[in-house]
Each structure stands twice: as structure tokens, then as C-alpha cells.
Length: 182
Ligand SMILES: Cc1cc2nc3c(=O)[nH]c(=O)nc-3n(C[C@H](O)[C@H](O)[C@H](O)COP(=O)(O)O)c2cc1C
Image (cartoon, rainbow, N blue to C red; front, side, top):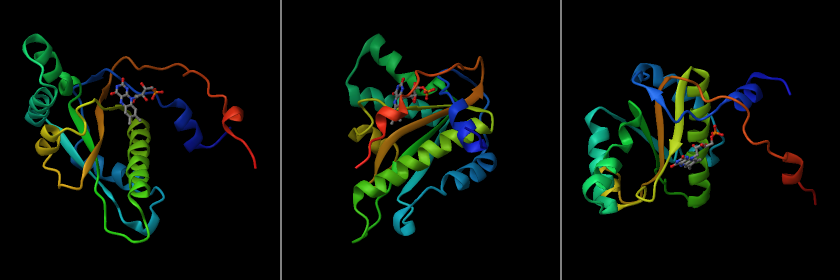
């Protein structure tokens, strides 16, 4: 298969371990603009992103601890999770009123933006990994992100500089088994 998009998608791997380098806002904006070109029924833009850097990541760690109710060493370990990358991009579903486009379609758009953003960040040379946790939809995490009542999270893109790249082939997808006809 040829073509830069297909090749980039095949090459992309999630990077669980990244360095302290991170894209600036100026560097992020054109990548977000590119990712925002996904199909969007009614062009509602039912999503937004929140960048967490520096201390915001520690406040996120505290919110996770509050949400999980952990104590002692386990709480400390959990609080440090957001410090695994210098930049976290929270993916927010931000539903827009519409008679035509139900919520599930709007969530599909937000998810598409996140996948596309992972891809273009990877192409730009950044290490990226989409992460979640059972605390993702908790009240404490919702409040810490200052979300509106109807907004909710799809997780975070953990972004940083590439270190030792996780490469190699992923488990092959038997696409012909996933395609049927009627
Ligand atoms: C919505 C979503 C949430 C995810 N959450 C986690 C997570 O919390 N922890 C994790 O190890 N992988 C998580 N993953 C999977 C990784 O992002 C990644 O896709 C996986 O490790 C496979 O690596 P690859 O992308 O290089 O194929 C999540 C993926 C998605 C789409």
C-alpha cells in the first residue's frame, strides 16, 4: 500500500516513555488544525482540548488520588502517573445542541480528532500515547479540568520527546476477517 497517510498510520506506534521535550502552543496549533479536518456531521466541533503542563499535572494527580480513594504509597504512585509526560492533552467531548446530530455522533468526532492528532503528532516527531483510567469520568477529575456539566473526557494524549522509540510491527490485523459484505 502506498501513500503518505497509509504509511504514517502503519508506522505510528504509541510511545509509553517520553523525554521532557514538548511541543509549544505555537507548534501544536497547526497540528490541531490538521486533526480537526476529520468528518464532522453539521460541523458542530463538539470537542475541545486542554493542555496540562507543569503543576497542572500534579493537580491532576491529586484529583486522581481523590477519585480513587487510595492512601499511602499507592496514592503516591497514582499521583505520579500524570508526570510520565511533560504535556497531557485532555480530550473533551463538548456536546453541541442539535436536532440532527445525536451525542454518539458527536463523540465519534471527538474520538476521530484524538486519533488524527496522535497521528500528526507522531509524524511531527513527538512521542504520543492515549491513556485513560477508571477515574476518567470521576467528579474529582471533572472538577479539576473545569469541565462544564455536560462535557466529559475521552482520556489524555501523553506527549513528549521521543526517547528509545517503541517500534516494530504490531500484532497483524486480519482485515479480511473484519470486512464482510451484504
Ligand atoms: C481511548 C483509549 C484509551 C487508552 N488507554 C490506555 C491506558 O490507559 N493504558 C494503556 O496502556 N494503553 C491505553 N490505550 C492503548 C494505547 O494508547 C496504545 O494504542 C496501545 O498501547 C497499542 O500501541 P500502538 O498504538 O502502538 O499499537 C488506550 C487507547 C485508547 C484508544
